[in-house]
Length: 389
Image (tube, rainbow, N blue to C red; front, side, top):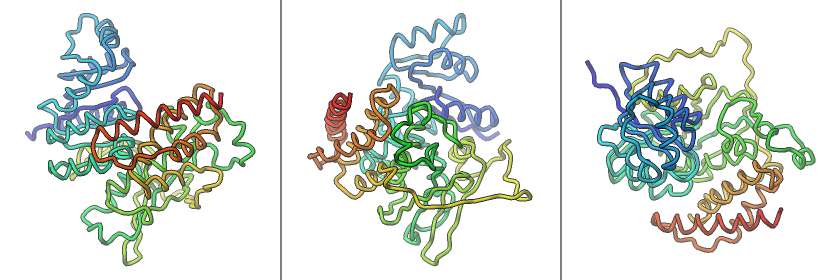
């Protein structure tokens, strides 16, 4: 019998983490969960622990760990650790083959780098890791001979389209975007939208922060930067098109003019399973696209005037490395302020742009550099938000 692939999940209680555990449940003879890490959802993590029985688990705080133990009752829990120590322990556990980084935000950066050093394959669903520290992470992966397999549906689609091809043959990568809930809103209408409006995504069911990023098109901007680091192409070779149906997940145009597209149902279990099974493919208990019925596929350019966050991401990619760090940090601050009701929707891009304008330190070659610029940008953006209040 072939040994099962052993995985650890950072962000197991989020939407990607839950989908990943569904993939594990569908392939119990192929996959085994070694470690789980979550933020604050103690009840759900306790349920996951009793179901998959990992060897190690982690949460953001000691208090959250105590809450998990309370939910577990008489069940004897695995090794449980809190904070950054817990993330590192889960990510580098000696029995782990693949680390799925599905945690939101920037907290998992050190854990991913430690996992790379420990020779773990990285299944990456966290955009911020490569946006903040793309050069550092990809260089570490090359030195260690570690694969970074993208789980974002768009980058996963490109990985599939490129399978077996030399990147020198690429003319351009074409990332598709649903356009979010405000695709057809005028600039005047965008002035009055609130968090609940922005959280009504027409296609995908995701966490709150990434759903707002989709509404501003910053999600696609972060993916442009991520695509640069994953596939080694420049900003001028990465295009974004609006595709409301979300059937074509992305495309690659090659030097001979051929365009290869990856299509599938809108279900994150597909790219997650691809990363877990690569280079093989496994059956998936998901519906296929039915081309016997009429299928409409619309494509169009994004509106950079109504959605300036996408242009800001291109600016960051073309500029000094510190700009991407500032972009990411200011976006997290601005989105949190919008969700809390302290900032208007259109002001999200304004906070990000003003933070980028104030960025001066272009030298980002170490993790300490990343942290320094990130800390400065968050403080700067927070002060800007107070001014809007």
